[in-house]
Amino acid sequence: MEVNFTLDQLPATAQALAAELKPSAVIAFHGEMGAGKTTFIHALCEAMKVAGTVSSPTFSIINQYSTNDGRTIYHMDLYRMKNENEAINAGVEDCLYSGNTCLVEWPEKAPGIFPDDTLHCYISLINDNTRKLRINL
Image 1 (tube, one colour):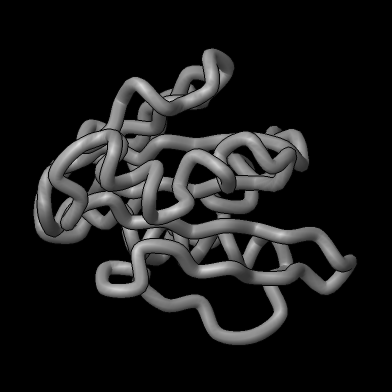
Image 2: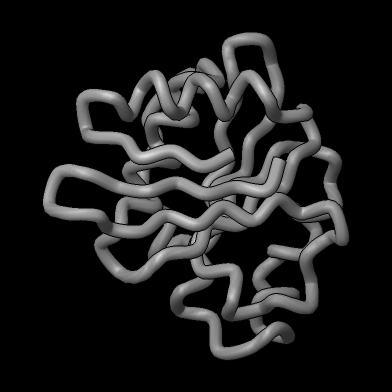
């Protein structure tokens, strides 16, 4: 799947991806700082009907959300991780293999701990208002 989208098209783009995901999907979001990873994940959580507030886990490392139908979604930000051992000690690996949906920013900080069937999602800037999303579904 590859699509260019604007901020106005973000909800529909996130909904299209949400419709393709298994409940146990692990999605690794790649992109430079400011590409819109957190913004896209926020829209994706809305599309998956997360109950409550979705916020950036930059400092907490892992945020846990519940959907309206009782599913658990983990949102992780590995930006501050120095290596895979630090990510493991923070509980990231436990989440990745929990059978719950996991949305992970900065996966390149601990690439060796991800399941083999991880979906890699690449978000890149086209211009100030447009992003390109590429994902291996």
